Image 1 (spheres, rainbow, N blue to C red):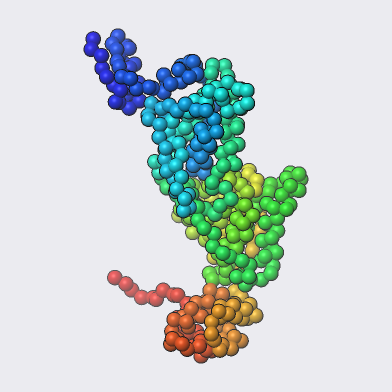
Image 2 (image 1 turned 45 degrees about the horizontal axis):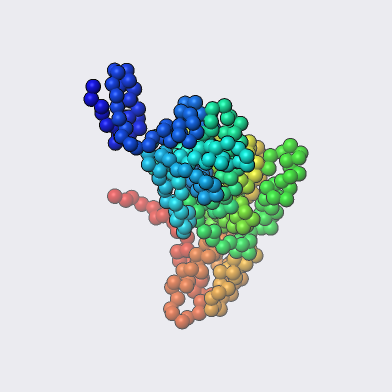
Length: 435
């Protein structure tokens, strides 16, 4: 019978042809290319089916970290590199992390003749972490040890898992979290400067916020010792323009500066894969999950958002099983949300943020004018606004005054009152019929 050269075929094809050929009594040839099986047999002295394997799954939160740790181990130890798990050529993949590009092993088998633990036998580590835009079931690291060496494989896996946690480049960063192919995808973003002095709100708002922050900072150990979870949910509720998002941004900025991982959640993630996001938040803890405009993907039971509401409630319940995760949500109308979404075990603190008082409005206007050349009577301008004006309305009125005054002319009281009288500082959709 004629030999068939199948060396150029993919692993599943080669394996199928080999099995069929054996059944028919034929022979196949894989030329001189080294297979993964032959690599393992040469260096670990046994076929793959006889080896002991220990698996480490990789998620979108640990995907790059797994490659970084693999690269570190290969740099620190004597290593022999072989093909990937399906006989593919050893490969590396480039990743963009913020403004940095890194290249890490993504598909190969690394044999460590001296092992990775002091005084231990040799092991091989396979990595499959190719960037396909989604995570497959094969993505992960597999530690392979000789027959009967389960303890060695387990201890080596524990070492690598700990190093992945410590090496993770996402840890302690501000991340955007978006949905892609049903998975959460993270990107590092630069924190925008934000301080409490930038947001003028009632002092009780910061008091309640500080109580929640203490659960994951200076009161963490006391809560754990008492048997309580350190994770906490905080909801900021109020009409548009009162500073909810600005306050959430300050919380995020303060905690990322303390080494927390901050996740800025896209609404699509909130409605599709929030449970996965909280699992990643636990991996990268201590962490802050920011859910802006949470009412966009939840609603009341019996409406068209039932599926999103159910997923949201399930995710919040799951978050309670983790420690060191602070959830910060904002909503324009908590009454529009199902009562189950805002009960105490899901959001420990619901802070109502109302429209600013006249005194607070004067402070907002004064701060908005502080870098400008102006002759504004702050007291008079504030009283020219209608009672329902928000802090955002005041800031927009100042912006419009800047855009409308002539070059070289100081902004005066009349300029701002003119903007207020025109009502142009409030973006409202016109009514009427449209084609």
